[in-house]
Length: 109
Length: 140
Length: 279
Image 1 (cartoon, rainbow over the protein chains, first blue to last red):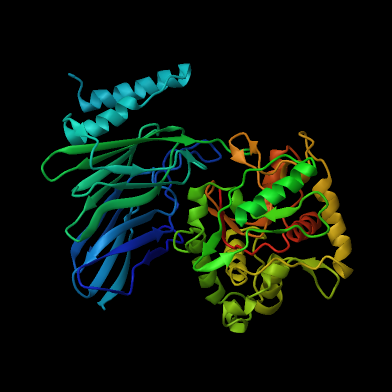
Image 2 (image 1 turned 120 degrees about the horizontal axis):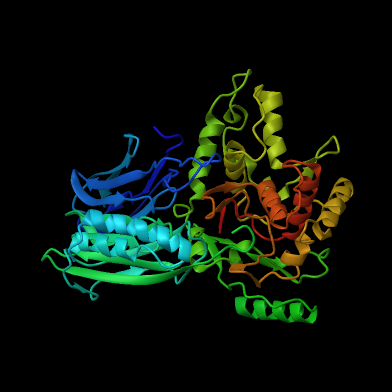
């Protein structure tokens, strides 16, 4: 597990049934591109978040494939439909095999 | 073209070596190849897709981009001037509120950012924006 | 109104024979709170009529990142800082939170730093943190400009966000302030430039493709797009000195603390913006 990886998501606490809401996600990650060299001239191996998935009650909202050109601390903003009360799950997949997860509940108002 | 993908990649590498020596633009072929890998060479339309990126990026390390293609099943982003052109692919699920995604990307130099949307009917949309990447004042 | 201010300021500047400037007139609101990004220059600044936050010199995309605490990547490090402040370290079995239950008690502190302590020393926020660590927690001091220090000083600084910078420059502080002023106007390095040559004489103009700011420090520690992390003010000083091909003073040195006091005083009236976003 990479050091200091901290997921953050912003989801409204409530929504009307069927409402489209805006979601923002950010995870602290260095996104080492594999293009850089260390002080001795050796290539620093690639180490990135390569996939990010947001789902609501098990149904996919967005599934993103990331390459090394996504900036440090990957940020995403997108929209989701909230058909009913439930949980948004957010999952980030690291090159090193680590998986970071976050969940946010939404109530129907 | 009789070239295979593998040959194209080798050619890309070779053109990089040459370009590094003589300063010619490289990698256009890599981006084209990556796009053909999605579209199979089919025609693309530029209607129904919006790609938003700054005309001038203050720092190439963090360039905000947003892409929207109503109805698309997926949208792939490419940075034509990066050593590896692929940036990210947004695959939209049944609960996507819109076929829109925004993120922040790295651009190695002034270049075109290209978005290719795949539509459910098998057609493709393409948008392209030139982003000038500036060189910092002092340290770069 | 903003535009009129800017035009008035421009008139003063051109009267003073200074280069014109082209910072934006945008107003900064963060989480519903208006942040003052310009103020009438304090009386001690003879060559500048209005002081502007570095935020005003950035592109709209960079500016936008600071208007929302979620879009502001500096908050990743604020979260780190909060976790550090809650974790026990050292021989006394204490964390920051053992004495400082709620970081909110630090409201107003950043706006007054650096300041002269009871022993007559000029101390910075970093000094306060390390004094707590060594004397009260029995812990090792953190590296002055390391990631832990940047994260914790960002949490403390954030509590003063929106409050006007207001450092004491008279009395016991005066000699430190004078030293800082001397350093600000001293030409250094192979390029033979002082801070003032760029940040007082030429702010608003372009240095290659970059927009020169007044070099204000009200937003530190600041998240820079360039290195995607929080940067401490002494690291920035060091970077600037290297850019003019000078041998930088040491991080945490008396010189940099004096310069920090003087620069803070040049931003009197600007809101604390910690953690700001810069390029």
